[in-house]
Image (cartoon, rainbow, N blue to C red; front, side, top):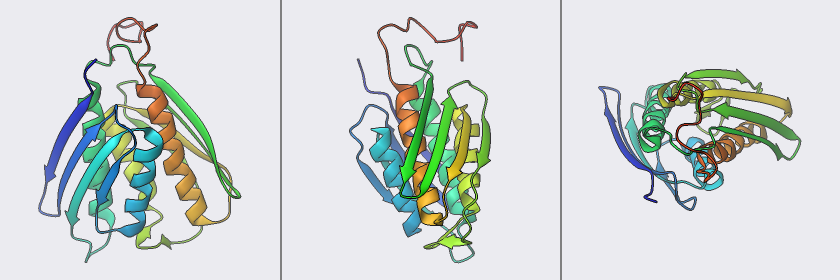
Length: 196
C-alpha cells in the first residue's frame, strides 16, 4: 500500500504557507509558523495523529496571529483532503477523550465530505504564549471546512487555558489518526452513497 501524502502551498498577500503531509507516518512534526505555542500544538497533532507533517508559515504576525493561524488551517485541511484521495478503505470515524491534568476534552469527527465544526471550549486566558485563544476555533473551522470533516470539540472540564487547548489539539490528532486508519474489513468507500 502506498503512503497517502500531500503537498499544499498557499500564498496570499498576508501569508505564505507550505505543508507536506504523510498520513501514514510516525508522528514526525517539523513546524515553523512564527507563533511558538501554535507550533507546540501542531507538534501534538502530528505526534498523536501518527502523521509526518512539515509546516512552514510566514505571515503578517506584526499585525496579529489571525491570518497565519487561519491560513495554516486552510492549507492543512486541503492537505488532509488531498492525501485521503477517494477515501477507500478508511475507518471514517474517530473519537478521543484526552485529559491534560485538570482539563478533559472530547473530540469526535467524521470524514463526511461536509466541512462542519462545533467548538465548545472556554479557555479563560486571552492568549497562551503568543497565540490568541480565540484563534483555536478559527483554526479548527478552517481545517474542518477544507478537509470535508464534521468535527466536534467539547470541553468536559478544565481551568488552565494551556491545558484546555493542549488537550483539544491532542484529541484532534488522536481522533484523526483513528478516522483515517485503513481497515481490510472496509471495502470501497465507507458510505451507503458510494462516495464521500
